[in-house]
Amino acid sequence: MKDVRTLALCVLAIFAMCAVTAACASAALPELGRCEKVAKGTGEYKAATCTGGIILTGSYDWHPGAVKPMFVSGGGATTLETTGGVKIACKAVADEGSYGTPKAVSALIRFLGCEDTAIGGPCENTSAGGEVVAFMAGEFGFITNTIKVVSVGLALAPRERITFRCQGPRGNAEFALLGSVIARATPIDKMTSTFTLKYAASKGKQKPAKFEAGPKDTPLLENLITKTVEEAGLTGTDSLSNAQPLEIKAKV
Image (tube, rainbow, N blue to C red; front, side, top):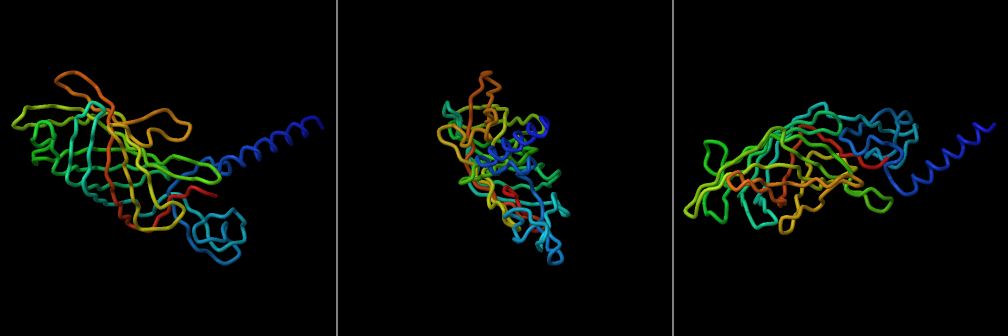
């Protein structure tokens, strides 16, 4: 009997925590997947977004992961700026990649038309002038997860060391990009063929700088000539075109 009372208290404690956070019902969230229609009355969800609570008599089932995992993306002007004032401005960005597990992403990102504004010359790590190529790995996580506010981000970090050089009329520089960057991912809880990643920063400070309840994790730019490292922030918007409609599921 004592064990039963203890179990009941534990269950009540769990429900109390669920009143504060929206992720309680599924520790796997946020995750990428598909909300697919099934025979009426046999599905886990009533809504075509696979949200609103599991009822088991609906018309839709949730399937984590992607059947067609490839995507391509592109964006406009993108800037990397450090707290010390170093600014690498790129005219555009182009990506191609794939979704792995329901949380994981890998991508080859090409920053195009890049220039160190202080030096006044192009930055590159390929034979193409002004092009910086980065192999990145990412994972979805909650930026905010409360009853009233839910937002999801994608944290991207280099899969291998990224270095690039800049040459111009006002000097030369060589850098290494370290750390990771979190982009706000939208839309969430909606099947779509396109996701938007928005990178935001101010004076070298990335926003957001971490996932909810997680450690600070932001970009760092190392000057390989002066051997100094500065915190950095990335600004820009990237649009991902998926090979099939997918959903970033954040709510049960």
